[in-house]
Length: 272
Image: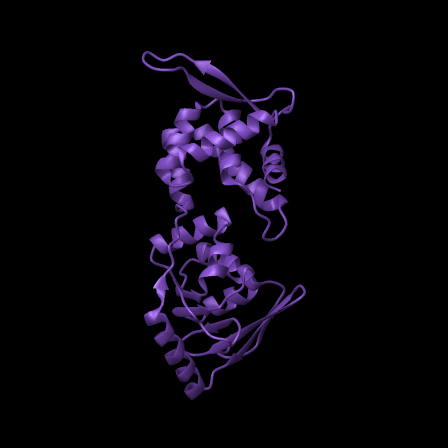
């Protein structure tokens, strides 16, 4: 790909993959939610991704990072040093991709995406200087979602490999089933997977709070809502000291085989 040439593709992923192939450092300015999601996917799967900075308003970033998958993948990239995210007044020039050799303006119309490029050295230098200055005074974005790799690793280690496998399968099914940018509740998904494996509420909620998904109180409230809807049941398990703990179970009348696709469908319906 020639630096600064126009790029056309059906998705942001196609455009970003092309830019990734020619850049060591990349600044993404005022991206759309779709562009941020595509960025996390492309960066996570690239063999040698460039160093990426994202500069955007706080409100748009909060909205897109409400998506657990996008945010947890972004957290992985931040932890690995690939991604940095800051908030501030970026500008009024629309979504831009800036590298050391070119500037692209991202345009999305219907199901088509294009990056209109310019590699004029003077222009690229001026744009880079402008946004580097904005980056220096911008605030770091507080991403509270844990890295997805940590979620998976600790779930397998602390709750069980079978529970982790079900969580992965259900999460993949959710991603395949939901419409673009459709939201789902990760606590609901986690509790359904836990119930499928007869996990104690105490264990899954403690793990969820420790890893940073949600508080024990949130897990408890969501459990109550799922129980009231007839999706899960609980049974008391005596312990040596204190009140009995609750074992989570799927309601046999509502679930036949409890496949990953079925758990995903229930999660999406519950989150709607």
